[in-house]
Amino acid sequence: MDGNRVTAGIIIVGDEILKGQTQDTNSHFLCRRLFALGVEVKRVSVIGDDLDDIATEVLEFSRNYTHVITSGGVGPTHDDMTFEGVAKAFSTSTAPHPELVQVLKDYFGPDNLDSAMMKMAQIPSTAKLQYGVHKTTGERTKYPLVSVNNVYMFPGVPSLMERAFVLLEDLFRNPDVTFHTEELYINRTESSIAQEIKTVADQFGKSVVIGSYPDLHNSYYQVKISLESTSQDQLNKASVQIKSSVPAGSVVPFEKDPVGTAAEHVYDIVNSKVDDTFHTSVRHAVSIIEQALDKYTLKDMCLGFNGGKDCTLLLHLFHAVVQKKYPDEIGKLQALYIRSRLPFPEVELFVQQACKRYNLELIRYEGRIKENLAALKDGHPNIKAVLMGTRKTDPYSDHLDSFSMTDADWPQFMRVNPILNWTYETVWTFLRTLCLPYCSLYDHGYTSLGSMNNTHPNPSLQIVDSNGIVSYKPAYQLLDNGNERDGRNV
Ligand SMILES: Cc1cc2nc3c(=O)[nH]c(=O)nc-3n(C[C@H](O)[C@H](O)[C@H](O)COP(=O)(O)O)c2cc1C
Ligand SMILES: Nc1ncnc2c1ncn2[C@@H]1O[C@H](COP(=O)(O)OP(=O)(O)OP(=O)(O)O)[C@@H](O)[C@H]1O
Ligand SMILES: [Co+2]
Ligand SMILES: [K+]
Ligand SMILES: [Mg+2]
Image (cartoon, rainbow, N blue to C red; front, top):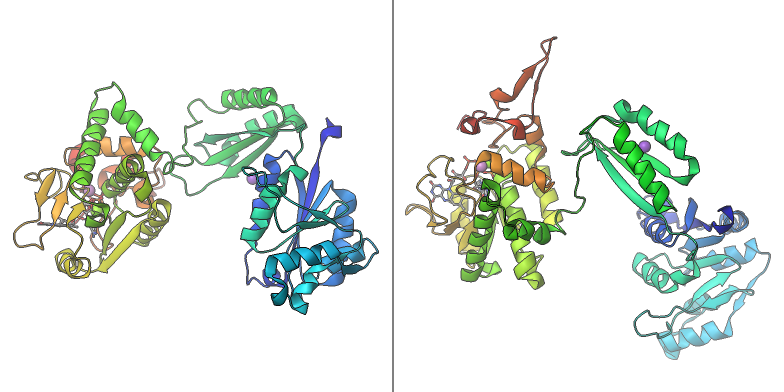
């Protein structure tokens, strides 16, 4: 087993990283790729642009690991000294490499080649040039990577480093090893399952590496347990062992990428043969969104999005339908957020995160809804229809249809209401079975969100413990559909 091990050490070179001016993302990229290649990364080191530091670190890494990957310090300026540092590590010097000089001439044009650029051809005398091969065309790359012994010197600019690495990754691949992984999600505290996990980890020793990662902000689980092994069989055994030793029901299903898999999961529901309230509600909502997309282009439409649960689920459905029917236009969904004067910070944060997650184009206003809809007409004359998460149980909404113009005394927009007939329970079934992220206030007893000055946790979710300490159950545990807005003053 040990004979098949391939290890790597990564050295990130750059003063700008140590000073906090640039955040290193290269080590994360390299660790991820190397892991997938069956290579164990044993150490990552970040050092400054200093000749002796580079030489010392490279020498030590070179002795200890199968491969050493450096990133940074291979450019044309005075502070780029990785080549010199590596030369020093191996007690040699740098000299212009004729082949590399030619490459630079071909690459940049002979007239553009100044003395600073020539420095990029000054490499350790024992260096090799490694050319990558394009996987699809089989063509050799124009610009080679420089290596000395087991040290490979990559550029620091992430896009260049990543491109070069992908083309050369066969240099590092360990053909004998594949790391198999599994993640288990557990809705108990880390301390309450620590003993059980330790027992399994001890039993499997080094054959299955087990990690435990608490997540304090997840609505679905409290601890992620990661399992990793070179043997699928051992991995499966450890997984079964963990599942049977933690309390029954504590391992929960979790979807890591609900946005990426949105269309697939939503249309599974749409196309299934089941006819219960949940499936019928989803089917109906999807058909209304599809109709809206027949009538309006994406530019004509926006989603009314204030971070509430109803528009959160609608955002997901909207995204799923566009992902399925208009895959080329994904990333162009427009959302309208009219922020109240006293928004909850949790709502603000959630809106921001949702924008990133779904790649929304957010149109933002602040203040009264009616006035801002007039501003929307002026500022975005293209928008004709607004998708809304309104349900019939909302105030003044029982007369609405799936397509209803705004009232006569309001700025005129088509209101598209795909979830008008959804029940409170169906809303939560949807959000929770698809593992969608939702505003954290809902986990603390809020069942409908307005502004800070008029919204409280729902009294029916209150729990008072024996010391008189008050807390609230999550919104999805509200049983009576009638009192969803009991935490609202308006
Ligand atoms: C795009 C849009 C159009 C609206 N059109 C109307 C309308 O025509 N008539 C009306 O009384 N309220 C209208 N409203 C206000 C809503 O009915 C509701 O009062 C508002 O969304 C606040 O909901 P909440 O009290 O449940 O948080 C509209 C709101 C939005 C975002
Ligand atoms: N300030 C706003 N900006 C944009 N759209 C809004 C705003 N207020 C309401 N809407 C639209 O009206 C719908 C109904 O509002 P409502 O507050 O009932 O639902 P929600 O906020 O999604 O969820 P919750 O009922 O839990 O607060 C929202 O889903 C959204 O589409
Ligand atoms: Co609502
Ligand atoms: K840990
Ligand atoms: Mg609301």
